[in-house]
Length: 245
Image (cartoon, rainbow, N blue to C red; front, side):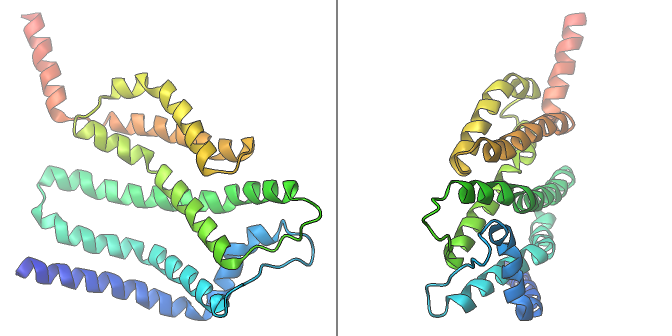
């Protein structure tokens, strides 16, 4: 019962932190959405604007965007509450690994979102505007635009977690660093396939996702060398002693 009470307390604190940030940003919700939409607006013909097809959509969509931004801002505190709940049940060596992984995964997710906003959006929307027929007046719906942007944010945020995934796989002993090196060529092909599925069908957008994925794979291999399973190191040492004897 005490664990359930603590879990409830941690959840309430996490939710309250998001709501407090949301209330603080509420007044600027329209400006926040304008900031999100600026990459799309910049490629539209002069005088063109986005549209809202629903009655309450102009109010609800900026609220959704503001709530998502509030969650991202409060994410460090939310993760701290999760860490404070599970930390007492972990061994010392598990604490030394889990906490850095939580911090690293959070930073990589945020970097992926920022990379998508500042670099990918411009390339994607420029491609769409370039190939749109001249007879069509481009006026994106704000709700569909938010859904599209959140999909790309999630895709880039998740794919930027590659180093964390590799570290975990090596740590639990499912793969070795040498196997990851040998799998490098297959991963490069897979990265471009994933990029082709997630991004619009132009070479620039695909490269903007595939190339960072390949670089992050190399970073994951480098970091995984320092967290390889201790048992493997001991077994390698034992085999070396046996061979020398």
